[in-house]
Structures are given as C-alpha cells and as structure tokens.
Length: 111
Length: 114
Image (cartoon, rainbow over all chains, first blue to last red; front, top):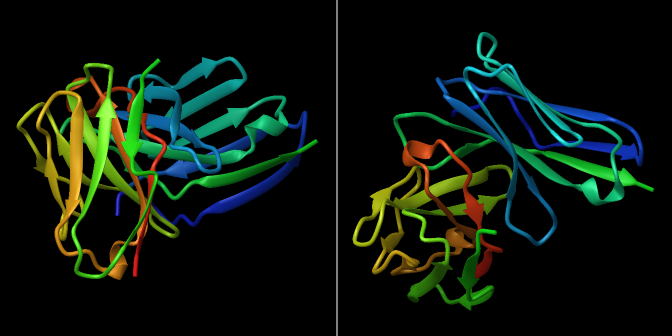
C-alpha cells in the first residue's frame, strides 16, 4: 500500500474551531493533493502542494508537506457547518497516472 | 468549471450480466479515469486513458474493461458482473501530464450487483 497505518478517522468539532488532519505516505511522491467529498458527491480538490513546497494556503485552508517524514497535513481555520465532509489526501508521482488516495478523515462540524 | 457527468446514477444488475457505466466530460481534458470507492479501501484506480482510443490498466483492473471512443467519453464495462463489484464508481478527468494536476470528478454511479 502507498499509505502507512491509516483508518478512516472521525473528528467532531463545533463551528468556529480549527481542525488539522494528517496523512502519511510510504512511497515517493511529487505532489500531494487534498480533496473534500461531501455526502453523495464526488471528491473535489481543495489544494495541491508540490514536493518543492513546504506550505500552501488557500483561504481558510493551509496544507503542509514534509517530504523527509513523508507526511502532509491540512488545516481548516474557523470551521463552518458546510465544512462537514470526508477529507482525503492523494499522492501522485512522475511514474504513474491516476491518484493514490488515503482512506480519509471524516469531519463533522456542528453549529 | 470542469464538468464531468456520469450515467446511470444508480444501477441494479444481476450476477453474470453485462454492465456499462458511462462518463462524459466537456472540458476537452486528455486524461480520464475510473475509480471505485468502498468502505475500508477508499478510492482505487481501475482504468485510465490518455486520449481517444487509449485505455490503460490501473491498480485493480481485473473484471473490468474500458473504452475511450472519443475525447469526451469514457466507459467502464463489466462483462460478467459479480457481487464483489457492488460499489460506487467515480469517473474523473484531468489535463496535466503524469498526474500532476487537479482531477475533476463526476457525481458517481452506485452499482448493486445481486
């Protein structure tokens, strides 16, 4: 598997709180993408961070990438109820098409 | 905004029957993908395509065929459906070479094989 020990994790938080989710990967990657999947929908990309970047921000989102530890994190500040979803990290490299997805983190944001 | 549509959205099939899942994208993307999503496994790549006429095997191609007759359309074919192929199937498209950029996903097809 591309991924380290990982089960579908679940986090429950209140609106306004910040949340951080992590993923680790085993094999070489040149890019980590974070996707969000809302119930009954397909995944939608939130942010892409390349191996030569340590941090990437987009609005309330912040992604980090540590290639030495082969890990990435996604933080959401000031969560909203509409942030309720499953969040996936996905890796890609120069040697294969398609993305390799982790199992995801289910985030539930309560008003 | 990228637009990927899938049909049907829901399908019930019998074991041993043939199932065809269709995907259409209006973004003129070269690359298209089929994934399945199962609890405990996340999204797994079945087949992908670099353009019209091309199909490549992904990580779990057994029991599936793919067809890319045009830039816009990419089909997934289950010649002899089995209950283990009950899943949610997602099509995606993208235009960057070698998996370096955003993939745009369709809404999914829920398949139940009885």
